[in-house]
Length: 277
Image (cartoon, rainbow, N blue to C red; front, side, top):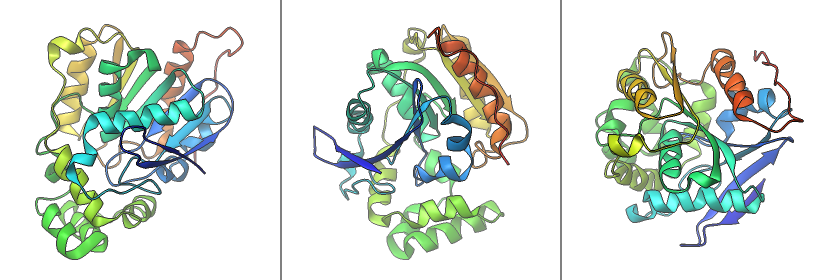
């Protein structure tokens, strides 16, 4: 585990680096941590061919957890990502983001495209996310975080969804600070989106993935693929938002060929697909 510091506000950002090859930054979704990439099998599948960098977003995992809502504005999140890339001396990287991590990837492609080799959006959107937190979790999530903490939040989410939360996701959620997460969610609801007209100017090679049961993200990803000059869309049949990334095999079957097609280094060659149990 390594750490760096956001140069704007001094927030500590925890990250991990393993493997060799082109740099690939993994950015998790809301209330999770970088541990999901290991738990779901992505690190094992990717680290033999890529220098895989995974970070804990501010307010998550082992990174700093400010309680002020303003600390979670997107420009600060992007400064965290750039600080990590600077710390590992990567001038540019492939960015693979899930949910909010994908939203951050869109913003980075919009503001700092020179730091990106490609973007992979899994269950993400370029639109303003207002209302999405209650849609993904449950309507009373804010009150639950304030009174019941993370165990109550998980209980409410499982009850609302009608299915138990998988152990890897539950472990990541329980490691969070409920007050920091509450501030983070409140800011997420206020973040602006990227206009369709602006999306047509994003030149970053992009792969968009969304489950057929993740209706809003599915439609947004499908539309983004028609607007972005170098983007393609792949549907994940039968998946909702919460299980976009698992099981990993179908996702990797799209991600690995995409990454290989973007990498232009003559010594990289093709990257085989690794089966994940």
